[in-house]
Image (cartoon, rainbow, N blue to C red; front, side):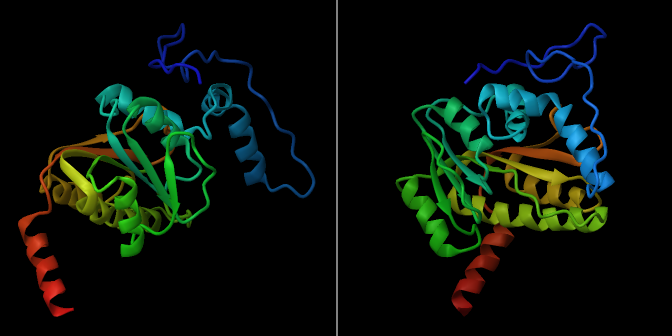
Length: 253
């Protein structure tokens, strides 16, 4: 797998795509009978996307790998020996990046969808909301806590911006609940968000249990998308009121 380096800039001084990727002439896709215009636009975008080409060249399972590579290039949190849990890990690009950087550590992925094996990682087909699957993740971590919890999860798009935003906020809250169960003090939580109105309240919630909360839009995120990533570090544990609520729920069950 090719060595990742930070993005270079082209002769114009603007960002020129993934590392080592030159600007080629755009590929035009002709319309075809039976193909919708939206499908033609998607295909043309894929064929002209330098990150898609780079993923094929570098052996990653998708362009999303470069989002994590670029976030890590900025924050330097993936390091040898770290224990990483990747939520919603299919198709496995983020697992590949985690294995590459975390060396002798542990890399565990979980997804509802089947995921082709990734050398150096252990993958569970399961649901992050299910206690039994949480226990399976803990077993694969050999009873230790994770240093990093990642999530690139997103619900299928409805095409309605506010609905999609609220759906991903719900996924982040599920991911955070999972992180509370496995994350070590001082740990990292890196999660995808579609930016919108509920984001401020979410960041306040994260600030109660992490020392620092940042919002990052890596260059690999499409410029016309509301997609960004929240990177929180310095995990301090559940907020006191959340811990009390959980204890009350347990006593009532």
